[in-house]
Image 1 (cartoon, helix red, strand yellow):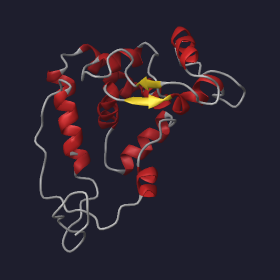
Image 2 (cartoon, rainbow, N blue to C red; image 1 turned 90 degrees about the vertical axis):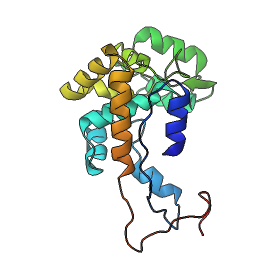
Image 3 (cartoon, rainbow, N blue to C red; image 1 turned 120 degrees about the horizontal axis):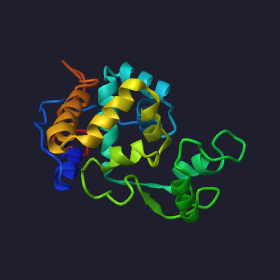
Image 4 (spheres, rainbow, N blue to C red; image 1 turned 120 degrees about the vertical axis):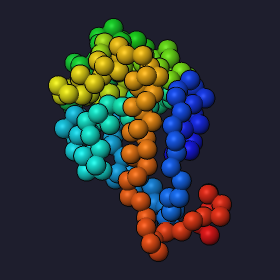
Length: 201
């Protein structure tokens, strides 16, 4: 949580109050992250279900997806979207054709290719460009494009893309991050307070 706060703030985003006192788990399992984090290939129904299960709203879904304004991914992640979307050697029809052609020049069938910016041309700045790209069908991930497939999430994408960044996205992102930080909090004798964050006591 603190890492996300620092990265977001250092790239021009707003700050928010990070709640303290959360107890740490004694065991970390990568499979738990895989089971709980939404896949980049999720459709809108799967995304809404995943977020609702954690007590998060459709608005939280759109706002937290905005974290894709910074960072990178690999060609492997979008390989099926470019070359085998429905299992018939096809491209996702929701992807802007010109953008798809640009991506195919970088990414070869099978997933080979360079690292890709999640927010093409603006991946080092926390801004509204991600939402503008999604509205233009130039969102890189299937889960990004899926935000347009529900009336409410589509409306939130439009709002985030046209409103002042710090007054809207920055404020909303901080609230959703605090809300997400309250998921699965350990209480009582559960977990521990680590003396060194990277190691169990």
